[in-house]
Image 1: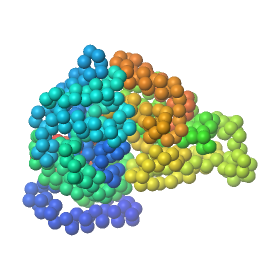
Image 2: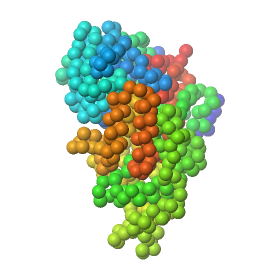
Image 3: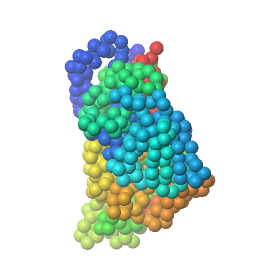
Image 4: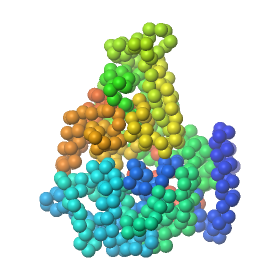
Length: 526
């Protein structure tokens, strides 16, 4: 069946041509492909410039690329299920957990995965990551045969989920001479690293894989950051699978012969962090309220993004039962209210340039974004246009995704866009704490915004020790209300997410928890 190619930019075309040339030069891959169709090409967004799992969000590369596995895995409903640990239990003291390690599990170097190896791997993580340490609250660990016994500092009903976060990928710490940044650690997944760079990763089958057959001999993972380019590369056959095709290109693949489309309502937020530090324009509550009231988020989601987003307000998406329909946004779209708030805050257009000013200085905001997700510049540009209508000047600064984390932890922004999982490690509290829990002496490095609310922090503490699900739900609702009342962030909306593959590949489905992309279940279609 002939399909008309969509027009793309010159830059996008150049990227596809470069991808094509790179593929033509790889004789080994071509020979393998011709021999048995054992090479898979998977186009992704570049988000990792190294493979050290304790670096913030880098562990996701290990689980997404089929390299690493954790003690537990999240299913389609975000329930914890066995993985390296075949079972677990918590004692009556609600502090002591026992994880039974699967006796069949092996590392990719052939070494057996023991409870002691898991203990040393987890210890390495909490030694290297303050965030992981705060999440897990581990007081002590010991190994007894294949039983890993963990005692927490306080009751932690969500510990199993925490240990399912990619921070806690189980690695062989007995290997001391490996360049983990470039080659990754020795893990337990179906694939292992052949080569890695920010532009392209190549995986090969793990000969010691313990949990079934490895379907591909080799997996090439080029970074195709422009969403239009990913779509065109998939059309041309340069890649077999693409993640997060832009909404405007989905019609090229839906119900079209030769493609399998997997999409679902996600558990993600698209948001903008607000820097409320002293001396910043957004330190004034009225300015934050004005900005929120100036932007028409429902219209962005409905008209600009064609209903591929559910409008935001509360921090938790409607796909999770945490009060999306119960909470009222006090800063919903109201242009006149936005203008009045700015006037009350002392901002007026005294020189007629269209922007409000105070003490001879315009109200300007530095908005840092990245563009590998098609909707992010759309949200940013719409915000810029709507903010201008009330006299706020928004300057958009597009950066590479790989520097975003450093900008976030340094606080060098007024607004910083993110598309992030709202239920991390099987619980919303890790997301809720990450950006808005008070950062005391570097204890919460992701919150460099200056935001602090003692009641919010106290609710977060209460959640961690609460076993009653009804009470935990209400705590999350109460925390969201504080964020809404404090106008602490812009929640644009909650997206659909997708995976599109050639019909030559079976089971390449998007997961509710997008820790997992390439898995042992992806295989050549019969």
